Amino acid sequence: MTSRTPKLSPAAPPPAGDRERVRQELLADPRVVAAVVAAVHEQVPVYAALDDSRLPEVRAIAAWGLERLLHLWATDGVLEAADLRRFRGIAAARAADGRPVQAVLRAYRVAATVLTDEIAARAPDLAAADAFALTRMLLTALDTISEEMATAYAATSEDLAGDRGRALRLLLDDLIAGRHASVGALADRSARLGIQLPDLYCLLVAEPAVADGSDMSHDAAAGLLDDLTAPDGDTTSLATVRGPRAVLLLPATAADGAGTVLAARSWRGCALTGESLDRVAVAHRLAADALDTAPAHAHRPGHVLTDADAHVLALLAGHPAAAPDHIGRLVLGPLAEPAGRHLLDALVAYLDTGSANAAARRLHLHPQSLRYRLRRVHTLTGRDPRDTWHRLTLDIARTLAF
Image (cartoon, rainbow, N blue to C red; front, side, top):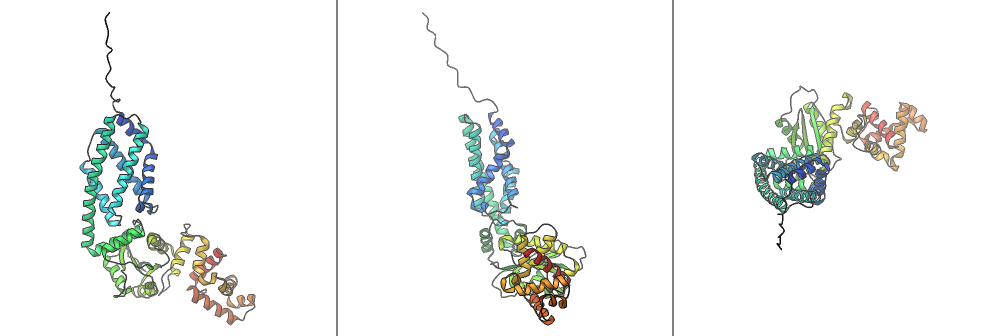
């Protein structure tokens, strides 16, 4: 009897192109990028503080990084010179906007963990060789990325510190563009530059009253800054330009003298003092839009447009930056409080009737008493009910607030 020894088939190798199949599945599913961004946002505190304007950039970098890492895994490739240039550029941008390099590198590690989990979910029977290739690729890539980004970050930081004037302009440029991750990151960057920004600030956007179409020079903006700031101040003021306009970040008290300084130059401006340091971008947008849309009679010699003017103009343009009732109270100030009710009544009667005498008759007051109350309205709100623009803003405000 002849015995037959069964032949054992060798272990079947994974299907050719298994990595490519997983790569294509991951790239076709937008939820993968969303999962990466969500994990980074949740696990890296600096990224959790990013405002909505910064998230598209994070998503774009995540999508590009995902595509490159999957390609390296599928082809047993390595990072190319173009990849390294882009990572160095990202690091330089983060040095300029104050996002710590440690947080950036941690975000890449978090992203690599999400990528590994997504591959494991789609290929639970992944061959050992493919799993080892994934691990080797990620470790090698992260090591290279860390070295390249840390070097570029340090070099950019040194360049910024070496050119102090440019570094300060870039700081304000980043603030008005919304490129700062958080107040903490801003504080770190300020400390590296050896400056202290005012907690209560004024953002002044100014331009010549008669534009000639040319861009504002940095020297002109710096000259305006010198005119508005005291040389012995405890905080640092900043200046930059945006097209034909100067943009200055000053202590809040500087707003009081801005109108006089601008009038001497035949300039006009908008000074906002009601936004926090993490909302400089919002303040700049409000001020710039106010200068774009304010009618000529809103600009009074010796005065600048304020938060109240900017918010009313944004409301009229159909894109308010605050709730209508808040805008109303911003314009009316103390008149919106119970103690100012008699003054508000006098203002409303004047707006409704069009004259002090008619308003006095409606309220059963002597005309002089009514005029005194209107003077108090002017003092407390900074708005003269007899001025065309101020009357309009007061009328809008009393409608919104009550």
